[in-house]
Each structure stands twice: as C-alpha cells, then as structure tokens.
Length: 131
Length: 138
Image (cartoon, rainbow over all chains, first blue to last red):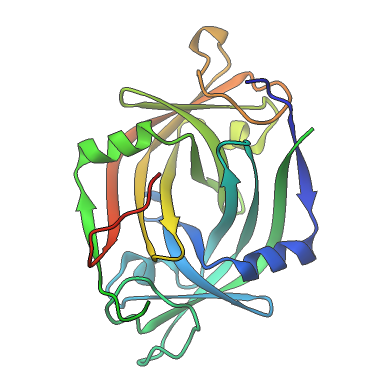
C-alpha cells in the first residue's frame, strides 16, 4: 500500500473537544525503572483531565507531582487514517476517600479512591488524512 | 452497564506476543528532555523483535536511541467496557542502515529511513473481561 497520507495539525480547541469525547486514554509516566504507559478511563471538565485509581497502584505511588503524558486517539486500521491528541503536563494525586474526586467511570470493579488530576502544559493533536 | 461485573485477567507472555504480532499500531512512550511523551507508531513484530520506522529529523530519532521506552498495544470496547492491553518495556535502538530497515509500513507520506527497534525486557498484558467472558477483537 502506498504511503499517500498526510498529517495535519489539530487546533487546541478541537484537541479539547476530542479529549472531552474520549473515555479511554493512555497515561505515560516515568517509573523508577523507565517509562510506563497504561490505559485509563478519563473525565474531562473544562481544561482539566482526571482519572481514578486504587490506592495501592504503582500509578498512585509514582505520578504525584510528576510530569506525565496522556494520549487519546481514534485510528482506523483499514483506511489507515485517524487522529491522536497528546496532553503533556504535571499530575497530582488526591485521596478523596469516596469516589467523588473525578467523574471518570472506571470499567473495573473495586475501590478507586485516588483521583489523579493532570494539569496540562502542552496540548497538541495530529490527524492523518488521505492526501 | 455498571451492574455487570468485570475482572482483570493477566495474560501469559506467549499470549502477549500473539497480540503484539496481530497489532499494527502501538503507542510509544519515552522520556523527552522535558518529560514523558507518547506517539502512535506503525509496528512490525517479527518473532520477538518489534520495529517501526520514523523520519531522520524526528524527536523520536533524536531521543530514544539506547534509552528506556514503553510500548503499548490494545483494543477497547467502549460499549461493553471491556478490552485488553499489552505493555512492553525495554530499550530502544536507532539504526540508519537500509539493510536493517523495518518492514513496518508507515501510513504517512515522506521518507522514513530510520528504524527503531524495541528490545523487550518485560512484556505484560491484561484483559478486562465481563461476566460472559467477552473480549473485543484487536
């Protein structure tokens, strides 16, 4: 198949619309032994991204006050087109005790008392379209 | 939806590699000078070697050589709220040699002369199944 696709930048406003439409993202951060990237269920309110996790997770221990990257996308393997939005910023962790700190809905059962908030420093997006 | 019970099941390493071999798109995470970053990449997985191609001038080319990286592939079903995810952690190497060029097929127009190889140190995977054991297709 010929490489006849081109990437277009997505404006910041549209990046936020795409983020708000997403319920699943990937969070990348630096663990002590190198980068990690895992799927997370997110909620977007205004210009803040939140997610919930359990108190014992590696994420809880490792992301507080640390730089993180969060990516959402929608890719079509058949047409080889799609978009990707990347948020880079700093995460902070709060223990809410109840599941009230984020409107994100985890798919997995079990207590998720920890809210991780991502304060964006940089939001960029790219769309791959047929040229 | 919320009433349905879901369980997280760890995948065996061989199953993880099977899912990797069936994946064409992954997310590469690495540490840029100003913090972690993530990019989608078009993968080729041959045996236990993961490669992809990038442009000579890309940030990835400049930043990942001989560095720790993480690569994630997966699929999710937002309706059923199920999915699977495989995480590869290891070290990347960058090659400009055409003899070592990755068979990965980039979607984008333009030269992609650089091959990035991910040398896996740790491969783990999880599947989120509902009470009927349904998982989405990759």
